[in-house]
Length: 281
DNA sequence: AACTCAGGCAACCGCGACGGG
DNA sequence: ACCCGTCGCGGTTGCCTGAGT
Image 1 (cartoon, rainbow, N blue to C red):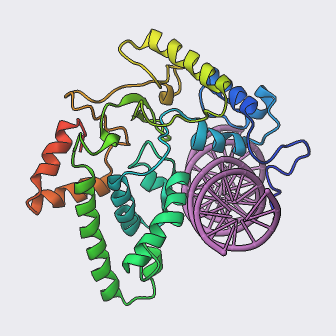
Image 2: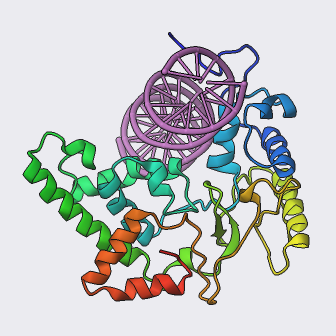
Image 3: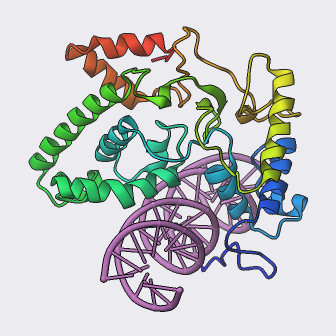
């Protein structure tokens, strides 16, 4: 059975989004929250398929997306998570809540691949899938190496340096792609600033948000009317005043394991630090 | 100034997973 | 248990822009 493409209908627009379409989509999501993408084109009158709407929101319009250059720490984290997880960009993106999986994927394909190749550290397809041909012993050996590298990178990437790492400083609460609360640097280039209209629209949104969430500013979402979408309900985690809100998902078995191992290897400071950030294991 | 080419990025496509009926 | 609709993800494409000639 061949499934027809979802966007194969007549009258479904493709290609770059216009500022007007962005405004329409943002307005709708502001009112109803993200989700039920199937209904979005019908309810908004947008000549776009549901997938296109979702993609536009998650990759471009969603609050909290940080655009622009990747920091060294982000880069390190991506490199080693890629070594560990392979091309599971969504999983990798969950560690970088301000970046979209598409952004990370693009950055990997356009910058890091090249860089690693030049360094000679990308001599074979990265990730577990690229190592299937190796003998089991070799594969395990390499996997262990990758794991160790990933642990080290995670440790480095989570090291808090307020001077050098803007990612971790002076953050503002907003939301991540997975619906968890996260932060955007107020100074970072904002999303969808293609027109003043969008800027104004979002400003209004923010103002409305600040009415219901005291102490917040700049880019920030508000609770949706229904309250059914957690993505619209900022809940800052930062309780220690470090200026860092860990906004990714709760640490998975992977991180727990990595961090446990780090402790075993006399890297207890990472564990301590993570506790400082209010991260639960 | 005009043209070519390569890089970067937004968007699309297709497949698999998942949940409801 | 099965079917169908929807969503999410990863791979790929194609357009735009800036650098080089």
